[in-house]
Image 1 (cartoon, rainbow, N blue to C red):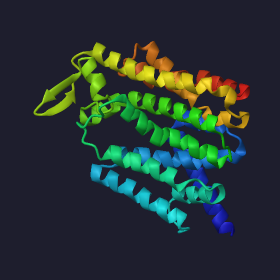
Image 2 (cartoon, one colour; image 1 turned 180 degrees about the horizontal axis):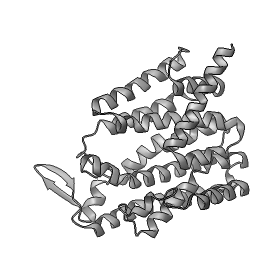
Image 3 (tube, one colour; image 1 turned 30 degrees about the vertical axis):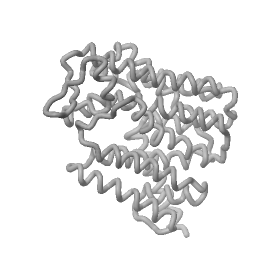
Image 4 (cartoon, rainbow, N blue to C red; image 1 turned 45 degrees about the vertical axis):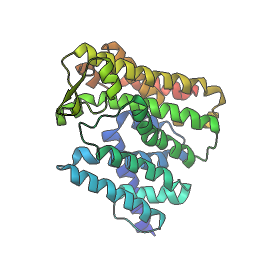
Length: 301
């Protein structure tokens, strides 16, 4: 029994470290959660780190896809009460057992990652709505599971979580544009309609590609997408009065989303501006932590 407890402690410690290392702004958000939600939230966020980074850490895209398929199968094993020798999977299994997390939601996250990873780098999403759907299936779904782990049932909080997740997901895709461009020389997270509108879309050999002949055009495209994220944050906050007080800390990811939006605005939506890489989402670390604490203390998001 002590061996099992020790293994679980090690597994949860691993989850905390993974989130702190690869998703620091959300790590700070999770520290504000009540104890009955925090443990589950760290396991869920670590699961998200594993699936979000699968393609980035793989030397070959096929290996990355195999890793994501492994997680699909791992979820089936977790719900079949089979032991998996992987720290994040072990912690997730414990959380599923205690909190009855919906299997469909975990599957939704992995399926979204697989569908995204299976795209050709030149296979552009057609509209912003497609990226909103991706954000809903990943970032919003993580919030649904965190709320479920806390035993919170509320239509208003589900709607708010949907908007916060969409805003967060869209903004992080924007922030990642330079990284993806450096890896494959393509901007596969700018929708074709947005790119065409701002003079970035070029058709070559029957394929549509985004070319950065105009930095101004890129900034305008980023502004258009960031405006959609901002609208989601506004809608989430309009629901605040209907959101139960015990649920509001789970929606604190709205704070880093707003911080990133503000940082983008400060650099005129130029995702290549080096200031975005400073501190926490372009903000001084102490400033970000104090703002997060202030929002948490006031029970707002």
